[in-house]
Length: 144
Image 1 (cartoon, rainbow, N blue to C red):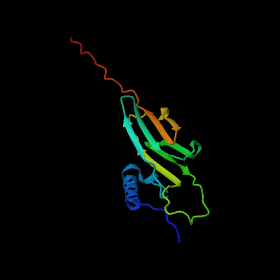
Image 2 (image 1 turned 60 degrees about the vertical axis):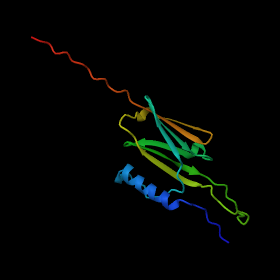
Image 3 (image 1 turned 135 degrees about the horizontal axis):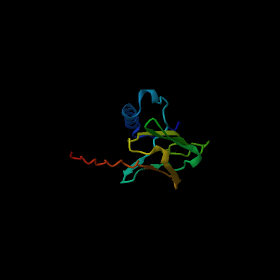
Image 4 (image 1 turned 120 degrees about the vertical axis):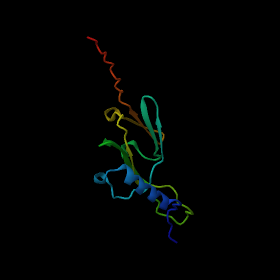
């Protein structure tokens, strides 16, 4: 009996990935490779920063690559699986392994030179500072 990985939402995941790539990635930056899994993320914004938390359990920090280029933030890497030769005893395999990638369009206010990435307990935290906004200068009109 051949064991296949159970993916209950694989069709929806593929559709979501394709739709995201249409709206977030310029045609020149399209990646035609198929990722094996997609990490879940939370995105926050406060007055000073944008904050992204990505669930990457089992991924070593050395296997994570974060880049910011042309207004796109890319998180990609690989999670190695523990290859099990004897699969006869398994009833279900749900843990994903292999390559992953997520891309996000950065707002114009993001300071890409100051992005900070930290991996702790299987969660990647990206802190993206906002650039200071220029305050309009009031110019006094002199009467002559």
